[in-house]
Length: 314
Image (cartoon, rainbow, N blue to C red; front, side, top):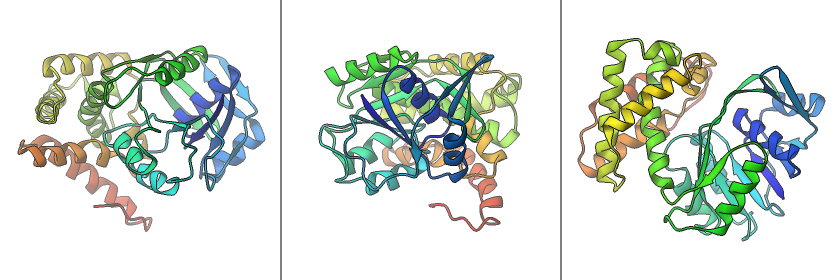
């Protein structure tokens, strides 16, 4: 199968390399020249424990169009989804399956609006990866990938992609509840990631603080009320238990938002807490916890983005 990975960062290289090793024709795309040069020179590398998988995979800057592909994996940062959707409108074959594997809410809706609802399926993954250096990705946590149609129906294409990913060593399962899974992950991330970014603590350290656990619980309860107003019914107590298990299972991990802050990059706060605040405003649900987390992270971002001459969307 011909697979393009758009945004070949840590998750993109992880998926692309394992899919290549299982017999697919993979092409990686990344606008970061250092990553492109490193992969061309040394191959795409995935470290699994003490073993390093090295694969010679074509890589380049994002192309003008994505025609001729069977699958396009979208693994760009969530704040770049709109740019991707606009760029490739009318430049993807009608039969191509577009699969976003990103953080936050709104990615499917943005891609479907520009590329067509019939082209895009919904995906969520708990696979964890860290870019140790350009082109070298450490597989820091084995997880599960979920696939589904936005409207909840069963489809052969979700079954097919699930089989291809599972064969590559990336366990995947189709589900009719993909929207619930996307919201569940987003709400938990909206509670964990900003606090880790603001405190500079690893996941396990967050769970050791009673004050931080209280804030996380309140953020999750808020997110659950917002989800219910949007028709996504989630049990807040179960979500809190889920978040606690994540903190224990990934105790040594730095969240992706903390990694962005430490590297003085833009974060995905807009696709997590900001979008929850927007939904809350839409449904007249109060969001004091998500609002303050949003403002604090954005203020922290501004402290270095202004220095670097970069602008962010308000």
